[in-house]
Amino acid sequence: MEDETEIQVEGCVTVEGQRICGDNLSVTDAGADGAVAASDGGEASAAEAPNLFAWADPIIEDPVGWAQANLLNFEILLPILYQLAAILGVLILGIMFSSRGRQLVFASIQRLPDQLRRLVEETGPTLVRPALWALGLYLAQAILAGSGMDSALVRIASSLALAWLLIRVVTAFLPEGMRKPAGWFIWLFAAFYAFGVLEEVYAWLSGVGPQFAGRTISPVFLVQAVITVAIFMFAAHWGAKQLKKRVDTLPKVDSSLRILMGNAVQIGLFFSAAMLAMAGLGIPLSGLAVLGGAIGVGLGFGMQQIVANFISGVILLTDRSIKPDDVIEVDETYGVVKSLGLRYASVITRDGKEHLIPNEMLITDKVVNWSYSNKEVRVKRRLRVEYETDLRQAVDLVVAGAVITDRVLAKPAPKCLVMEFGDEAIELEARFWINDPQNGVSNVSSEVMLNIWDKFRDAGIDIPLRHEDVLITPGSTLKVEMVRAKSGETEDV
Image (cartoon, rainbow, N blue to C red; front, side, top):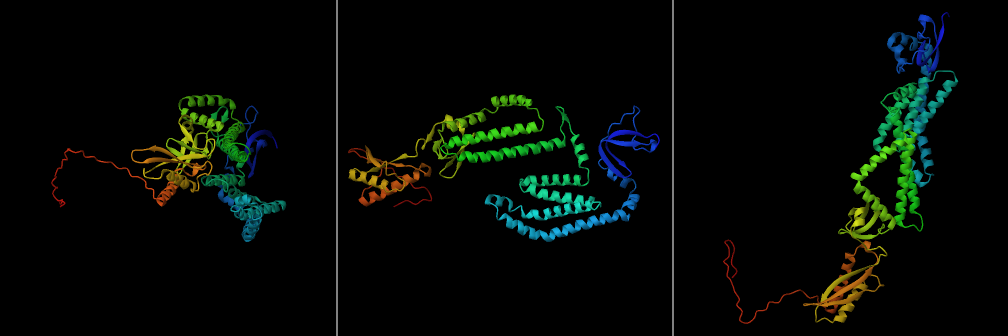
């Protein structure tokens, strides 16, 4: 043709109802009939923003003509019917064979190890039907394409079936609150891919957003950031969990050192995950200098208590003055140390209450560790007997009452000491040892006292009561005052 000039454009164009996309397309301009006009300088015109709905332009401009040319054309209608028949057949076959497929999957799951079986036994059977549909539609698409027939509808259906399968797999491992957003995101992605506009939507979303540090903060960047951070953090959490399990099984390592090593590993992995995520997103790590200065100012003013507890926790874990399963008493709190953290220690009392004691209090306040060097604890309990009592017999009975108590140790042996000859009675003190203070001290003391009471009662030894004597000397005057009863009350006769 005459006056034909070749120009280069970017984006997508529509030529005779065919949509062509790509970079630097070669398009022939035939004067007034051409689709693209060259600029005065002979250079290519700048590419405009892609039109996401250009495929609908023929329908909007002439719907009747488009319907006559496409829907009422037998050559176009017949491949559509073939595709609909293929889709319907795959759906029916998937429903028919899904029950048998679930049985095979369930039988296969039973052969897996226990830990892996619990992970997939609820999700595996639900994936059978969408998997059969996705596989059948993919095969139908391959057969139609191999036969030279149009397979656009089957491709759309296979994309949607694959999206359904992916949603079932992904949402099975996500928290309940994240399953719906993840499902909608996958459906949109599959729909854009099925209709062939995924690249244009991606390009459009990548260019939308404010500029910051030479980068566009677009929706695509935000999604990439969230996914990247989630992947690295999940990997760090899983790795820290596995390494902490391994550290907990190390032989000849104190429990407090194991906790310190586990916390150090966890912090190191999360810090590495944050650095890798920032590097993967292209965020300059030099910006951490400003962040570090801000954190330093915050530590100096508003986070002193938190830092103090953190450092105190490291000290407790390194010097091993308090360890898990130790029996401690601090600020009227008596209980067993369940766990030690970098901020607080968990102490469970005998009444089932769990106290979270800040680490700084364990460093600065007075703490009684009943099991610091060993768990053997001596318990003392005082009691009184009358002066008429056979004192040596009473001492022997006190020792015998302590010996027959289950939790009292035989070595060191229980003892009974005569402490004081008081004004009203002789005071004795029972001393005995236990090696399980975490099970309580008052309860074993009560059992010992009950056994001593039984021994005294069998031997006829009484526990004296406190009393006061009133002495009236000769010649003293005793004043007696009569008080009239109030109205409504009767006088005693």
